[in-house]
Image 1: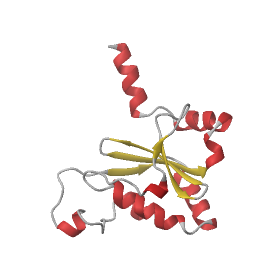
Image 2: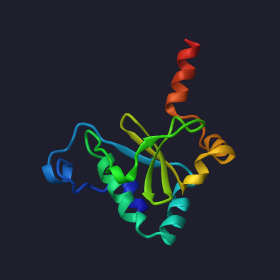
Image 3: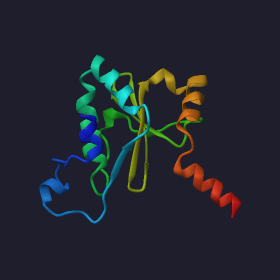
Image 4: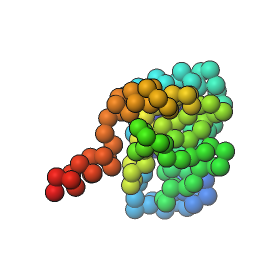
Length: 143
């Protein structure tokens, strides 16, 4: 499942390259940060239903333009200190943390909701490192 997600398995949704037969000019790249595969596999082993949700995420985010996730997945931007990241629900209390900047989707981790606040969130933000937006803010401040 992870290998197909990162390799760009063709979408079967309407409007995707698989159904239209026309290659898009743009390609959405999905990559993962170190540790993502391990956290995903650990949660998927305990909660097999999240495999269907990650498949939906993969197919919708690869569309040109990217599709909106279903409302029950609660896709939203996170609050400080993770304000440069997005999250969506893969399960009742199982969260996918990711960024979507331009044509790049980066998967960071799968965690539980309580890990998004307090010291755990600060530790997570530090572990993830700066996002493209943070790097751009720094560059613009220098100029």
